[in-house]
Image 1 (cartoon, rainbow, N blue to C red):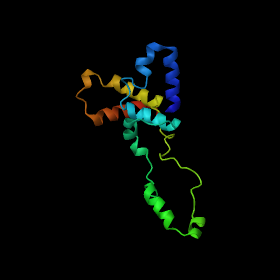
Image 2: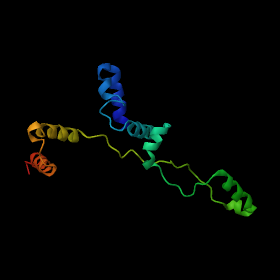
Image 3: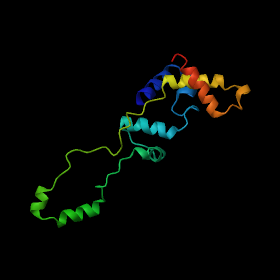
Image 4: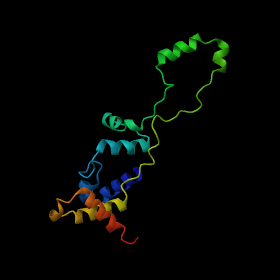
Length: 144
């Protein structure tokens, strides 16, 4: 998603007339805060409040995380020997799940929805959803 966003930004710089269609806030984007939040997570940039709310599902739950007051108190209660042999964190882990697996909408999906738009005309508006699904399945798999 980050790579796609980078390409779209470059195209918008070279062709400003396409900005209304390819910008991160274009009318085509259904969840602007979610998409920009995922891109910022992939780039390891700070999130806005709206992006933090929309990307909350990608947040890792870390049961070992406590507030600083209780952690300070627990270190004071440990003896000198216990403090010496206490396991320390070796590396800082990310607070978010890996979002690199979220692919952008594929070309095949775009073609499929364009084909559905051509089939689902005004004359077929009363078509049942399962019938439309079967029509599209047969149309897409006619070579089988």
